Image (cartoon, rainbow, N blue to C red; front, side):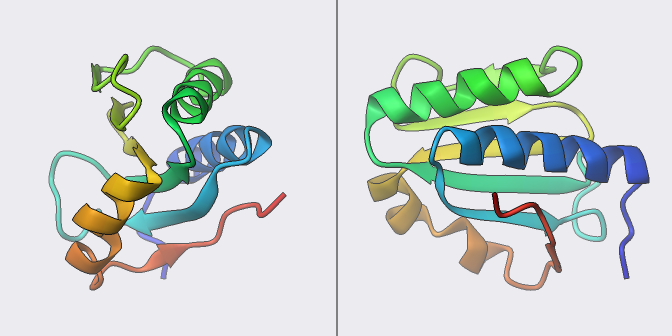
Length: 117
């Protein structure tokens, strides 16, 4: 059962589409609302190199209405966190993604269906 607001789900879908347009890989969206008080969802995706990570981040920022409340890691191209309040986008270099394995840490959270194209 979906516990996030429809507007949040729509914003997650916008972020997912933007990331996929820049050829993000292994995109996953998680409903973390039952486990975190700070946000309702995570969007997690990977880029093959630093340039692609930055391109994915830029695309998400253009696609999602509003300005992120917080942005961390921009410029390193390894792991960029975009906090939009109702959801957080984690755009990771493939190596960081494998090392930190956020899906394993949040394995109890339900996955959200997102557009795959």
